[in-house]
Amino acid sequence: MPTKVIKNGTIVTADRTWKADVKIDGGKIVQIGQNLSADEVLDATGCYVMPGGIDPHVHLEMPFMGTHSADNFESGTRAGLSGGTTMVVDFILPAPEQSLLEALAIWQQKSSLACSDYSYHMAITWWGEQVFNEMAEVVDRGINTFKHFMAYKGALMVDDDEMFSSFQRCSALGALPLVHAENGDVVASLQQRLLAEGNNGPEAHAYSRPPEVEGEAANRAIMIADMANVPLYIVHTSCEQAHEAIRRARQKGMRVYGEPLIQHLVLDESEYQNADWDHAAQRVMSPPFRNKLHQDSLWAGLQAGSLQVVATDHCSFTIDQKRFGVGDFTKIPNGTGGLEDRMPVLWTRGVNTGRLTMNEFVAVTSTNIAKILNMYPRKGAIVEGADADIVVWDPEREKTISAKAQQSVIEYNVFEGIKVKGLPRFTLTRGKVAIEESTVKAEPGHGEFVAREPFQAVNRALSRWKELTAPRRVERSGIPATGV
Ligand code: DUC
Ligand code: ZN
Ligand code: ZN
Ligand code: ZN
Image (spheres, rainbow, N blue to C red):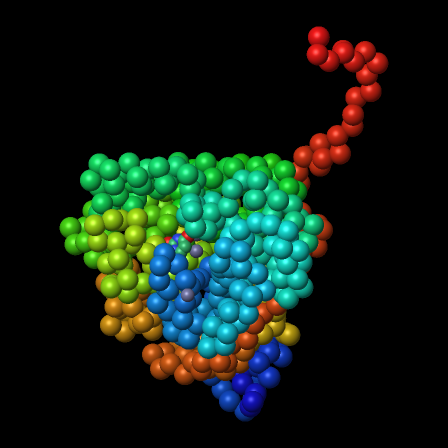
């Protein structure tokens, strides 16, 4: 590959902003400095040169709710690159009783189409000796994060005893547990009540998953993680109740991380009141969109650092797939898109409004994620030796989001009509230009798996439970006789 230099731009990282050129050779950043030269020049005049975005939460071609999510690794990563995201982390979902390694092999097959780099989280969808044993092999293969669904009763959900066992195993292996925090029993009960009362439209989806079910589950997972002596990452934190639990835990010294989604930051529950069934059903995801107070809480968390990451949970379904739920909202496949829109929408609603600094934007879209998932500074950084996953960001480029022009294969977009200002001029994946303004040069198969090492012991939770795990028996002389 010829050498490249990105010239005349301003580098923006999570901790500083300065003017310099960036030279790339063999997919890596090899030099940062003034007046650099190379075989090819990319002009970044007027632009910010930032670490490419990392989306830590996507579901590409995922078997779910009787169907498969519509975007695969090709269209999904192409969508990501178009919006400045140069890496995704997808969830491997073993079927009940299926070997984790067998599921991994299926995901490796699917991800051979990826246009950008990717990594995996392994979901713990059932529990047994085999899972316990295979978790070690999964970590050896470069997957150090395990996801637990506290909802989707009768399908993906794990019980508290299974979660506690798995969290302890994560602690022993130096792995980080993730949770989808919603009380699945309460959700199932509310769903049945709503259906029995004749509430079968998409608005009932939101009624069946109020913030309380998320707050309760987040608290429960935090306490269980603390007892298992392991840090915890709570995916799609959508409400004040869950955020409050995370703040409280962090204040006590626990390593608990929270991940708001761009959808929850920008879209609210009024979408479900739309008179058009399709419009409302297209916005059905779990957790559902919330009200403005919850949105303010999430923005405040990103500003204060109590929430660290912005993701998408990209899990797209076509109009026809969404219509599986006509007459029964519990059958609407849960999920929305967002991979292409996360960075431009967060920049527009966060940086352009003054809610986030540019450096905070880089932190929550890339650097914090790379650190939490243990792939920093290979990813998430502009430093010599890092992968050249870079977005050259033009703060003056504008567009109105429209499904007509998107990379995702679905026919609609939940951000339709939102005007964004701030878009990639170039997106580079390991030194290759994948996007040049609206020209897409992304190549299926270019993406590579990013292996992630287990965490150091220092990254463990600060639980006091340890003091109780080796109970001392009390020696007694007077033991009453039995059967009296
Ligand atoms: N929520 C969704 O909306 N889709 C995928 C899985 C999930 O938890
Ligand atoms: Zn299938
Ligand atoms: Zn989830
Ligand atoms: Zn998800």
